[in-house]
Image (cartoon, rainbow, N blue to C red; front, side):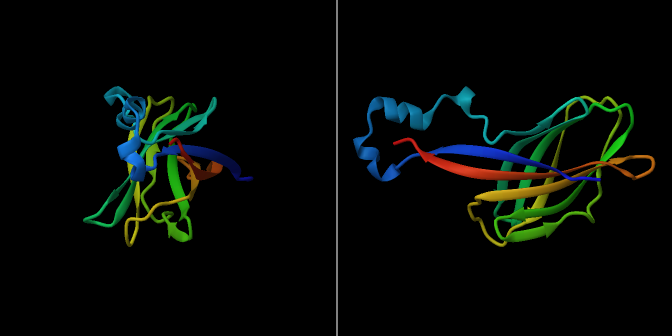
Length: 159
């Protein structure tokens, strides 16, 4: 089975805070933003006739050293599936999640959220995240689809 390679562009605005004392009211308003606009990281990875997967957030737990990823997903197939993660690469750090218990989803399921995490030795920024995922038939454990999502972060300095 051929792995579907999907590239995702994650563009993020940055601000030069060293010049905050010279910002205009409009720049301050853009920096602070509106509370309803604060949705965090949300990246649609795939939404086709068979499967829906979206990253709903990425955060780091300083106490445990875990980097958490929140997902929303939906099985649009007429059979139950398991979502099995494989290799995750965050910049140069490689994590194998294939030994983790897969996420089970009933056929024609509603959108459902779940989390997965990888160990990070320290809080660091990331530029590229690659996530491998296999969609397995829940009854036979045979592969239905395989994905490799490459998320590349691009920073744009607004002011």
